[in-house]
Amino acid sequence: MYQFEDKIWFWLLVIPALTLALFFINEFWKSRTQKKFITSSLLIRLSPNLSKFKPYLKISISSISLILLILALVNPQIGSKTETYKRFGIDIVFAIDVSKSMLAEDIAPNRLEKSKQIVNQIINKLTSDRVGIVAYAGKAFPQLPITTDYSSAKMFLQNMNTDMISSQGTAIDEAIQLSTTYFDEEINTSKLLIIISDGEDHNNSSLDIAKMAASKGIKIYTVGVGKEKGSPIPIKKNGIIQNYKRDNKEEIVITKLNKKVLTEIAEITNGFFIDGENTPYVLKEIDKILLDTEKSEFESKQFSEFKDQFQLFTFLALIFLLFEIFLFDSKTRWIKKLNLFNENNTTEKH
Image (cartoon, rainbow, N blue to C red; front, side, top):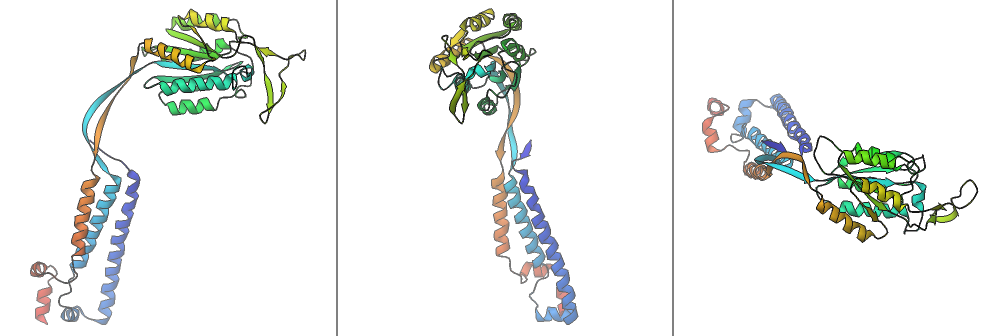
């Protein structure tokens, strides 16, 4: 088994091809020009040691050297052995509340930014687990399907904001329902759903949907961000608070952490509620959860270990280049004896 590491360098092969083409064009032109001013026999008598064969040999060696150097850049690799790689882990989906209530600043810098910090640090601790992200407000919206690409997960996480979903409210039931579609039922992995929210629930079917998730083997853990005493929702412009969100009666809206709802949702699936105010505490609890959760095989791949071969091509190219450097245009004795172009007979006749 073999492969080429950098195939892009193959385009450089046009250089030796062009070099050879220009050489033959030049030789043809030189031959025609010489015939106009001097005969072949006279040219041999004037330059008896000039070899007709050497220029062709030199251009061939130079071209071979260049081709070998290009192959060294391409770096052919030969597979030395095949190994089977198995990946074990847990499927984890993060459902993150992006409703306007998450802008409340009872937890610094605000509830949403705190949620993103928590999820980001959880991802940093993962090794082979798969993660997915769901955003929800009045509706649930898929952000990132199940993947082991943690860089993409953190990028999507960073871009989440309260303006990404136009429908406002907090539909935890839709978030749970959408999250359940992320898990592959054909793969027998442990399935965790971590909901990060202030718990405000504008629908009454969250508990029923949680029971449905539990029947599919999904365990839900909820992380509550916010305080039960509540906080107003600031309206900012250029980072400066201009006002606070008001209801139809022009009274300032106070959004509170609904610990009761989040606890009930988690307990239905044999999970539990985690207070999200203290990030180290949350991470500690999540670590315990991951440690106690069975990791299953969800991926098995075979791959070959390849070894670089560019050194061989570089060495051969240098050998040919050294040979070309010490190759002179005049005839050498052994080539002269071969009489490749019938030069000796021509000289004797004249």
